[in-house]
Amino acid sequence: MLTAARNDLLTRVGPGSPMGDLLRRYWQPIGGASEFEKNPVKPIRLMGEDLVLYKDLSGTFGLVDRHCPHRRADMSYGWVEASGIRCSYHGWRYDETGACIDQPYEDTTNPKPSKSGCEIKAYPVRECAGLLWAYMGPLPAPELPVWEPFNWKNGFREIVLADVPCNWFQAQENSIDPVHFEWMHDNWSNRMKGDDRNAPKHLKLKFEEFEHGFTYKRVREGQSEEDKYWTIGRVALWPNGFYLGRHFEWRVPVDDENTLSVAWFFVRVPKGREPYVQNSVPTWKSPIRDADGRWITSHVINQDIVAWVGQGAIADRTKEHLRSSDIGITMMRNRFFEELEAIREGREPKGVIRDPGKARAVDLPDMARELNTEGITLAEFDDDPLLRQRLREFRHHYGQPPEVRAAFAEAMGIAAT
Ligand code: FES
Ligand SMILES: [Fe+2]
Image (cartoon, rainbow, N blue to C red; front, side, top):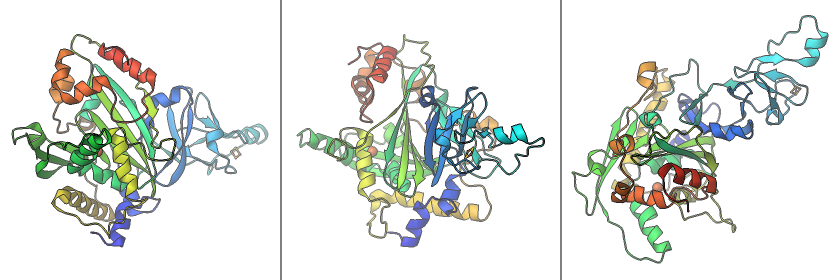
């Protein structure tokens, strides 16, 4: 249980908030580069700020204020040019650094036009693994960590976004909550199919911290301490991610009561289908409500979202009752309190990488590294329950577009369904 003041500290992310300040010290994934193949300008709200993300005609991405510095028109109705984005009201143009590079009437009539003071707020954007990353903190920006799976070859990757109407932190606490797999994903899924059997129980848990987050380890009925679920475990990725060995999830704050869920998936093609080169990583948006306005419950992350939003717009942690299953949650909260203190004292927070050599391939604990890098034959997919199911259907998010399914099937060498 937390005091209301400490709950506020963990959850509030708007400009000037301590947690917003901490999260801004890390590159945040904010979308997929492939989204911009069709429409090069997208309004986006992040950390309580209204912004516009664009790709100009030279291929450079920019993230700028939603409002034009001239007279505050909406930059998401601007258009992109060879360099930068132009406001549709009076034609002022800005580049990705925020510099104002055109003021058409002034440039025509004033022999010495001055654009100084007319800069638009702008944040650095980078592309990596098909994802777009923004850095909204104090400069100089740290290195963008290239997590090792981003360097894996011969894989089919896809990016799934969802707009989730609740605070980011209850989503992140779900990253260090092993027991919910048994109930929310296994037993509840069984019940929805009319099956009253229970999945193997959790018998033992362990939580450990490392430089880039926490691992949780588990033994369930039928498993032992020799199992990789105990020896390696899964990763609650610091500060707002989750890594499960074949996919990442991030919970990116939109504002105090909204979160952008960003998930990145990788499946290595079966042995014999290499080389597989994916030129563009498909990005799609997963709906989270059904036609009646109820939450969609059929897919794994949709089920998680039911838990997150069910806790309220901002979970009231003054009313909770933590037990031993929640030790990891307490560890994570305490780490956040310590890191808030660190930045208050001017120290670098946990896991920030300044060394470019180190950032190029950052290893994470991984239960399936060889499988993802060396590959297995299509027949061997049957030996891995998760992969076997992945071939049949995309069970993580509702609403995979048929063309993404078709491209996946083509990559894997299986029939599209
Ligand atoms: S308001 Fe944008 S150019 Fe005038
Ligand atoms: Fe889950």
